[in-house]
Amino acid sequence: MIKPVQLPTDAVLMEALGPARARIRGHGGEISIVGVSEAGVVGVQLQGACFGCPAAAFTFVGVVKPALQAIPGVTHVECGQVNASRFVVARIEALLCGSSSGGSATQGDP
Amino acid sequence: MNNGVAVFDAVVHAHDFRDQMLLNDEARFMRSETRNFLQLTQVKGPPAGFEALNGPPDHAWANRVLFEESATDFAMVQTVPLFGLFKDGMTPASCAYDLSQSNPRRLLFCGGVDPLHQGVSGALEEMERQVKEWGAVSIKFYQAQTPKSAWRADDEKIAYPLFEKASALGVKMVQFHKGLPLGRQRVEDLRPNDLQAAAYDFPNLNFGIHHLGDPYFDETINIASRFPNMYLILPIWFQRYFIQPMEMLHVLGKALLWVGENRLCYGTDAFLWPNLQTYIDLWAGLEMPELLQEQYGYPAISAETKRKVFGANFADGLGIEMDAEAGVLRRRETTQRLSRALAT
Image 1 (cartoon, rainbow over the protein chains, first blue to last red):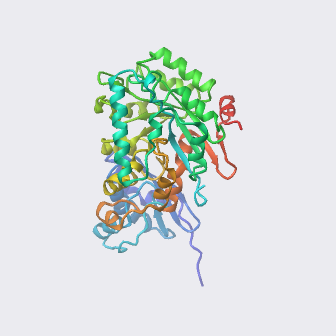
Image 2 (cartoon, each protein chain N blue to C red):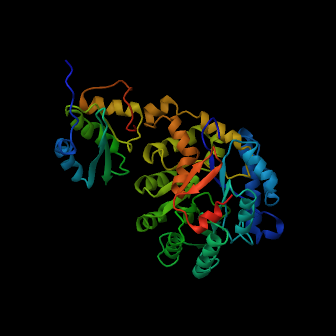
Image 3 (cartoon, rainbow over the protein chains, first blue to last red):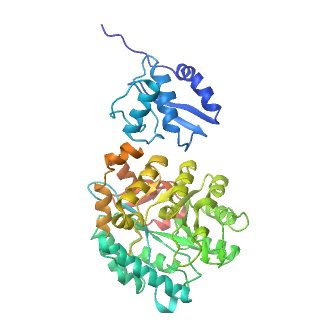
């Protein structure tokens, strides 16, 4: 029997982001939840010093994305501000997350 | 439309290089250098339009070049308020307006003033006249009038009144020629750095930066990446691509990586280069080589990226909605001025 998966609320998502957010805010940055699709895709937005930051891909792929993807019901995390190539995303995942999608990871863009 | 994608050329001109319009030797030098640059660009690119150095374009010819010989749907005819070299500016506002009126459904008028040449009060009056009488949708600035005469966009006495006036008139985007001196003005007078404070102090006004600030590419891209009200308008990139394809792929790649796909705008600087379909085909078929994606992190150029750059971004920055299938532009906030400007 397939159990329906409950979509996480914003409160749950923000709680999961707590430690990451504390680090991001320490640099003058901020992160917010844009929304959650019915398919469990979470959209996030980088703000403050994170906006236009050259290390935004690192922050998103290495810190924000893993924190949110650990939540049941979250199938994917997207950030339209991260434009780095799929190769970059794969490299960061391999470095920081111990996994690599072999260059097949989607970009930050939906 | 080009294969179903609307094409909005952000910048075409009606330059007036006729002898009687040139003020000095600097202008003659500039015309000569422009001729040399045209010759260079056509070595590897499409033929240049040397006839544009003779005088303002014939309106029927210009419309044919834009709308019959290429898939362009709309274009903005931009004034070039360079008064230090030309009697009425390099593209006089009247020439730009006249051309726009030859096809007002598809050609938008961009005015232009200069607070040094006209004085701040005179520039403000002229802005108001261009918007109210001629339906200017945007205003263009050229800050380095001579090697010894230039103004900064963060000058609160000279520049800020212009931005306040633009906002009051309902103009959503002001535009700046950046880098690429048209003559022997100091290139540093055309650096993009002065736009930072202006964009910060006028967050509801969009700032269009032309030519990617050539040669200040990295500064321009860095600045635009941090200010969401800045748009990068691409003319000369297309011409230079044929001369330096790899260099231009790097510049484009950096812009897409750091600024993203939502604030880059297609533009050709016609009619110095009248073979516009060449540039449309180039952009429609352009791919970011995987080597550059892998080694430099540049994103792939998706169909959605191409659609946005081809016109949606520029329309968005201007506060305009495009309906290319119907062949009309609509202002998001209808005003009397815009109803008039965009009337059929």
